[in-house]
Every structure is written in structure tokens, then in C-alpha cells.
Image (cartoon, rainbow, N blue to C red; front, side, top):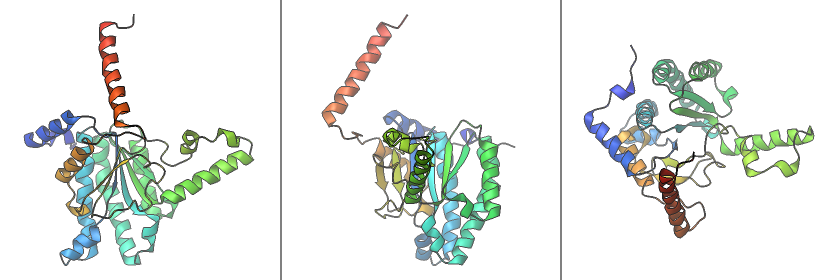
Length: 279
């Protein structure tokens, strides 16, 4: 039986969703650095694996509410290249949990029109996990709802370096000249080329750094840091981050006056178009 998320919301939660949407423009792309699982467990005198297991429940809730809010793209920093340096037993547990998540969640994701994507050095993952991941991406590739990306064995510097290597290869083969390399063209060589840059980056656990996450793509992202540990970060905490985002003015290097004038012109043009529609 299909578990449709659109049918699982309480009336109170639906009201909060409507309130958020009415505040203004929702972010098109949210990216989250999920941090604090280990500290969450330690504060409760539990093994670190307990924090990772509870963190999966946060993943479930944030994916679900992102879909319910009609956010188009959600990217979760699940496992960095640097995370391979952690103690081997912990790495093994993380891979087991990832495999479990893919096995248990893929049908529900598919039923709710979620398209699963992954970025990172995926061939470094255990073969079983890699196979499951690609099967899940293949199963959901035609879905048109939330575009959910898992950053696995990922490094922002690695992806930029990889892009430079690919560009150098194309220049050497004569497919590309140095003059052709604009910012826009460079971005097409990144693994994130199928999605827009993040509008909002959320970091849990209070750490004030990007940790090698989407270094190119976050140039003009709004950043929200919360002391909340990832296992405690559920929809109410997410709503607070989204509410904060919608109070900000995104200027992209311009002045507030320029943004205000452009917005006024846009509203005026819409009014004029309503009175004088194109024939």
C-alpha cells in the first residue's frame, strides 16, 4: 500500500505549511550539512551508532516535509571523503545504515515521486551499497517531484579538481579552447550540473564551517547555522530555518535600492501585461 506523504499531515502542520508559503519565496534548493550525530549520542551516554540511527529518522522527516512544501531540490551531505578517516568500525556502521536506508526507503520515495540522485566518488563505496544506490537512481529517474541528492564520499575540492582535469582533457583533444571556459561552462563539468546552486545551506550542531561541501555552488547561498544536533533536527527546526531564510534580502552583490527597484519594475510589468496581453 502506498504511503502518500500528502495524506499524512495533520491539520496543524498543514496550517504551518501554508503560513510559511505565504511569507514569500521559498528556497528552490536547500542543502544540509548533517552534523552532530556523535555528540548527540555522547551527551546521552549512548554509543555513536545510536546518533547515526536517530539521524536517519531526521533524514526521513526532512525529506518528507521538503516534498510537502514543494521544495524542488534537497541535497544532504551524508558522507564526506574525509569521513573515510574515521575509525573503521564506525565507517562500517555508516555503510550498513546507508544500505538499510536504501533498501527500506526507496519504494516510499518512488511512490511519492522523489527522484534520487548521488554525487561524490561513488566507486569508493562498498560494492553492495554502490549497486543499491544505482538501482534506486534508475528506479526513480523519471520522477518529477523532489530531486533528492545524497553527497556520498564527496568533497567540494575533489569535484572542482575533477572538473579541471576534464576540461584540460577536452582542451587537449581540441574539443574546447581556453577562451570558451566561462563560469557557466565550467559549472557543466561539476557533478552538480543537473541542479541549481543552493539558495539555503543549513548546518546543524553549531559548527561555523562548510566542511568542503559544495564549495563552488555556495558562492551566494544563504547560510543558516543552528545549535540543534542533526538527530533532533526535525520539521519544526526546519521551519525555523526556512522562516529565517525568507526574512533575508538576497542581493547578489547589488544594493538594497537596486533590488527594490527591480522588484517594483517586475510588479509594474506584471500589471501592464495584465492590461495589455500579447495578442
